[in-house]
Length: 275
Image (cartoon, rainbow, N blue to C red; front, side, top):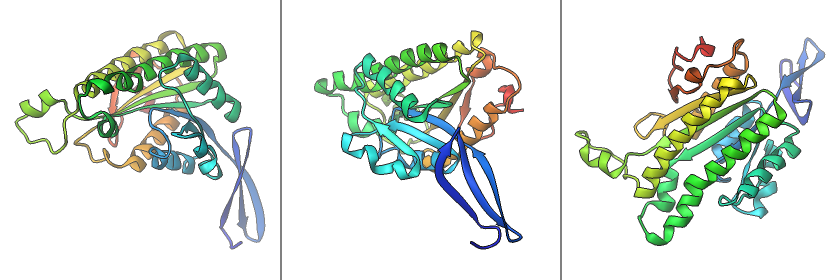
């Protein structure tokens, strides 16, 4: 290899990635700390751009895939997956345990609600879609967060949980806005689920009050933001935010944890751990 060239070893041990650099004809080895990230809410391969960006930013990713046959498709990139039954609390619990088994531990969790993505699936208010849409956009998150907080309390290890929501205006907002909105409004079920997710995230953030091992990051990407269609930029911003939380010297208060931060902008100064 040439002078200054870096070789990244694909093998990890104790959350460290071996990096080899040739400097002045000498090989210098050092470890790069890796974080283990669990993602729920957007399946592979639809979330692949997010997952790949996290992987390139020192994360080993565990997510869920649409099909069993896709499990091994991304393992070379430190991206692992399994399938999940969104209507089952047992499946939510198994998802977390499978991630722990594969990654050995979980340092970060990202819970995604992408209203524009759901609009492509549940954009029409059809009676026959109600049960599936509720399971996918409401029950899924309730089951997972209930199982997650139980597991966090059992392990009592440092962990950061982020709720990311990409919002789309409701039909009412679309009609009542004086400025033309250049996006399709959500269906009734997506609009309800979007508000339910925001409420769930805010209530989950209160768990930091008596849990010094838990940190929460609430992140919002509105339909009119610059990063709305750019998952790579969203993931890059989240990585920086996760890293900042990890380096914080003080525990969050529930008010700090419950502050919504707009993706792509400087994190609110009220979120004191970022000062």
